[in-house]
Amino acid sequence: MYKKAPTLSRRALMKAICATAAALHIAPQELFAAGRNKITRAIPATGETLAVMGLGTSRTFDIDIDELGQSQLYEVMQAFFDNGGQLIDSSPMYGNAETIIGELLGTAKNSGGLFSATKVWSYGKAAGIEQMQRSMDRMGVQVMDLMQIHNLRDWQVHIKTLRDWKEQGKIRYTGITTSHGRYHGELEKILKTVPLDFVQLSYNIDNRIAEERLLPIAEDKGIATLINRPFQRGSLFRLVKGKPLPDWTAEFDCASWGQYFLKFVASHPTVTCIIPATTKIKHLLDNMAAGFGRLPDAKMRQRMIRHLQSL
Ligand SMILES: NC(=O)c1ccc[n+]([C@@H]2O[C@H](COP(=O)([O-])OP(=O)(O)OC[C@H]3O[C@@H](n4cnc5c(N)ncnc54)[C@H](OP(=O)(O)O)[C@@H]3O)[C@@H](O)[C@H]2O)c1
Image 1 (tube, rainbow, N blue to C red):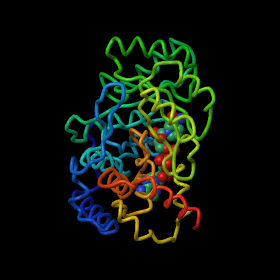
Image 2: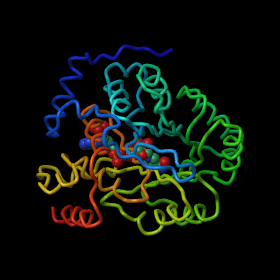
Image 3: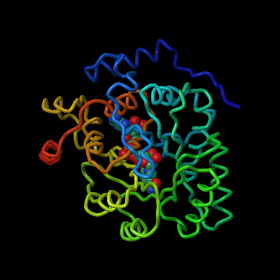
Image 4: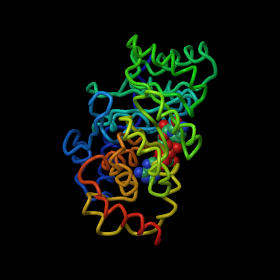
């Protein structure tokens, strides 16, 4: 059963939004400008478009149902959809996150834009099937848009089930994931030889290893990319703490360090969707704003790297 009333009142929510808008030097309504100037990307396998800004749920959504009322997650989910967000990424590895997503989806007003994504993270065919079915039940979806093999675990087994499920219409896309440089060699071989719709990997302004081989392979093979750890698990903010955002960032509609990091990732031509995670409405609005407006060009991207290194 869903429907726990959000505890943050409409007035408190509006206050938080106005404060965020003021901090970002934009009008509050611009934060709700879903569809206006929104950056989207096509999934190579089908041409279907996706908002470039998605939502991660590792750690941030791993709370007890009882704690939801005290959290800002109802507001985070609603503002995600209000700002044109689509892809929500989870995993059975993230504790209670899938159940929390299901609960939030039961209350959020969403005009059909959800693109659900989770993972299989187990050994053996039967355990994988059971886990994937449980994930769908927890998230409350009949069809999972994207099912990914988490960190390559038992991929030779799960890939066959994923293909069967896709054929049966239980999932729409297949994928595989890694993070912070793990298993890149093996992943490279898989991407070159095994047909997959999506690959998820870590990429950010301070960790650009994926630019060398994985992103070019994904482009060559027509595989969509999901980018995790865009803030290096939040540690990028420590590099810029107390430092002013340079004026020239206005040239690509950037109004915060969070947007600086996200727009850097989004401006890589092979990036399909980024999945920053947050527990806070203020940060969610900041992140969604990065999915609107202009992006840095190749020259500007180099300037952004140099600037960060000079701090
Ligand atoms: N192998 C895999 O498949 C794999 C591995 C890693 C991650 N992932 C996926 O990728 C998602 C993202 O990665 P991640 O969660 O590890 O790290 P991340 O998104 O790089 O960083 C999350 C951290 O950044 C903070 N944050 C978010 N927005 C902010 C903003 N605008 N300003 C300041 N701080 C901000 C959050 O804190 P607040 O709560 O305070 O905002 C949180 O601590 C995961 O949630 C998961 O869905 C998948």
